[in-house]
Length: 329
Image (tube, rainbow, N blue to C red; front, side, top):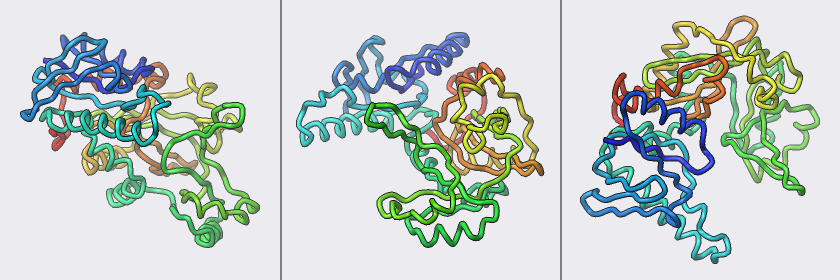
């Protein structure tokens, strides 16, 4: 039997690490780089769900697939950009529908099923579920209403920060990537919020930080690491601004029992077997949940502080440890 790894070209480190962990357990894997479909990779699928994949990794009969690790998708990325938009768009969409339909029809364990991932990505749902499960969350407003933002800011004595619900970057006139980070709002910013009519944003109370946490959950295994983001001025509002400079400073962290149980409860409520959680720990010791990414990166945490994340993923994919229910699709 074979474990299907769904990703894209250029996503090298994590799939390689998990593949090696699977091989160490005597398991076979097949890498499906979605950006190669449909231009360089072939998929045949019949009405019974049978068929095959064929491409750079060889030929794989679909009936041989025992589990799926869904990590990344870039379907149709190599369909020529010069193709007329009215032709290229349906080509990409048909490619997506065929591959995602194939995954839905496999009837095997998936880490995680696309339907669960898409639902779990909704930040309002995450915050509401986290709060209902006993996790503390920051005061939050998601809106396109400038007056509502100003009223919210007045009620937050420590100030407010703004962030986006999705991760993305914009590019300047020289083509340089400008990542959108969590940013504090000044009084002048609050006076100039007209751009909200074009794009809603998320606003949260600004909190003092002792450390920030990345909590990685695989199945029932919870692995936490902490970073002192306050040691560098550029990282104080968002540690990712100084992510490279801080990469060796991550340390193992033990979660309080009630926080760990809340994390596992949220994983169960979202139907996930993998999740990358972000928390703030205040100087008073409050643990505030920010978000969970159902497909977040993890490789730097395997180096510093050495969390066994790839091994945990391999164990769940190979059915060596407990799997969360309801993800056979």
